[in-house]
Image (cartoon, rainbow, N blue to C red; front, side):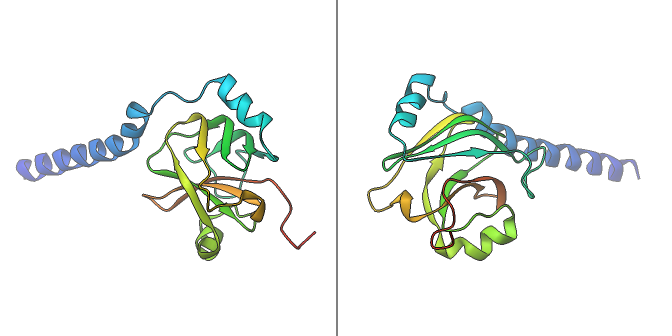
Length: 161
């Protein structure tokens, strides 16, 4: 019986360590975010601004973003913070969403702009094939876990007024 308890406690410890490793690794290897001058330069060249807020429906204590988002034709930048996590991606959507279910339902109409590698401020280059003005919302999504992080509507739904 003692050996069963030992195996169980060791397996639990390994499991907890594995989960913490997945969560902590991106934090430990994240590069330093862009400085205020870089973000301000992106802000000066932006066409749209929006706010990431912590109070969205599927945001919670571990999945959130806050700050000002600057959307330009070449760069999308955040002056703010994201909750740390693995494999974040920036998507542009034709509609505002704030839940995982809504994201999944609309994903085929979205475009992935690129990976987000920093958690305090970020800058993501917009591919030449993407026109941010053709979308209305920027979304941060955790690809590894299919988890909604945050979203910001930078222009009203196109054609919807």
